[in-house]
Image (cartoon, rainbow, N blue to C red; front, side, top):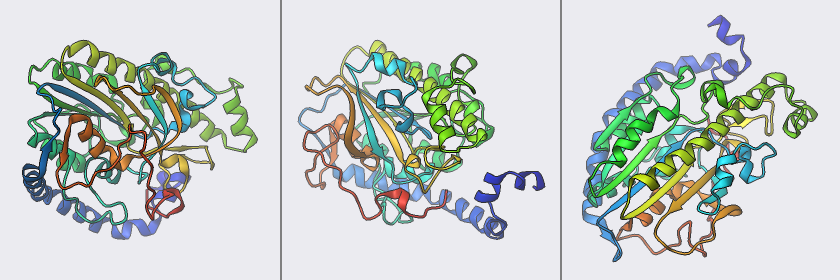
Length: 379
């Protein structure tokens, strides 16, 4: 503990008063997990009674959703970042839509995924959600895969336990983990080769979660100290410390690795599923601050980088769309569930008509909490 408190981020995240309420927090966490089964029952009931299929609903479909971690679009080369962190994405922009201005309502994983996958209230996050993407998918006859490279008992209880097939490859949580996201590939290929006609495959990457140096193999260590590029010059000009400069290099290496994985997993989808409706969605739960505004690296509830994330989409539905990078259109990642349901041609029949991300008339509707980084939230 003494050594821990010698490190400034540890003192900031866990001040002495934090520990006075620690046991209560553990008990509250355990109680919430026990309530998940009741939530699932309610979600399934609503989905079974409110599900509506679109006229063009297809009997054969495969939809892939990659939920990555701690990726801010501020560090994507295709989004204007000075470093070439996305060389593979750049090669495939003629078939992808990359949105650089998507915002997560939260800067931490659990609340972000609840916002992504359920109708969780942004203004009242402690209220239980009434419906979920996974329950509607099950009601529509989809076989759900939950393939995770994160070890999180709350998320596995709330979402993973709803899936038909689950893999938890990573056996170590948080910063201590060293499992690479590519290690999910064999499980992913097996899911793709499943002959079941309708599949929703959800992959939960560890992405660029701190510790950044553990998030990529050695061959992706391209950005190093002393390279004298525009990013290093900018950090020095703004008096960002050497430790955070080191973290920025490691973070950019992790982004470079994610770039390679996106292409690899998308290519596998296109090669292994020959017929039917297919879609691929890559999104991050939240971002990370790595010297963007302050001399700090990690989850950040009070800076824009903690919330700004990329959304990357591919679909074979044949509808004409403008491909490439969109740096102006603002997306609300809390709408992920309804947008993916729209791609699957399913919906809640009580929903009022509204525009979706890919519609020309979609407009970001900020809620009272936006901009989120102006509000005080705990990490």
